[in-house]
Length: 116
Length: 116
Image 1: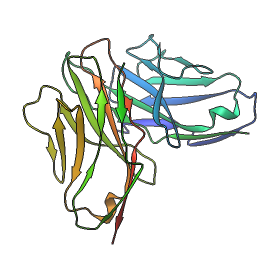
Image 2: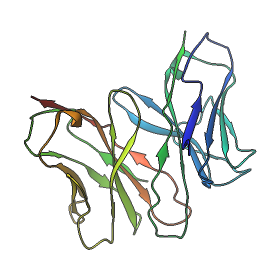
Image 3: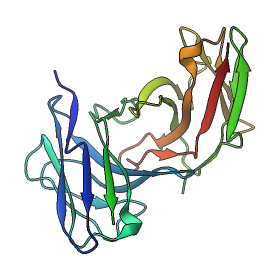
């Protein structure tokens, strides 16, 4: 099992350009998440999905869109990149079995994005 | 709303000593889970330990233990016999347990440096 993979690992964009980050998981997990990590601020949730075809906003959703057309993939899009979106982006997934159970969240290796 | 507070931005500890990383939380959820993650300089997020709010005993995983004090809303991570490989960022996080509260909220992290 590859676990959670992210493509690309690094990217440099110019202001106004668009791009899509791909997250893929092979664990048949229902839930998937996109976070951004900035120095001194920990990880903040951008968007998440509780199943195929669903998406929901997290803590910092502005400037991003997401899609979950297939259960194993969760795409994060930047339509018009801004320097404030320079960050490290992490994808994560988890399975949920029953209410009240602990489900470990598995993280991808991260994507380092720089917007000039 | 959930909030995690880690008040120690950085810590220096002598090798082989025990270290306690502080974490306090705030939530209105009656049931929740608390997590600790390690992020080495390579960037990946590594799950360390989990504590459920209704667990009777404090969680332990090898050299890691969680000092859970529910009344004080604290969930400190204790690392016994620290090793050079323990040098990393450590994040405390929490999540509501029941369906409808799917977001993992992170603290800002503590950078631990082990001194040989």
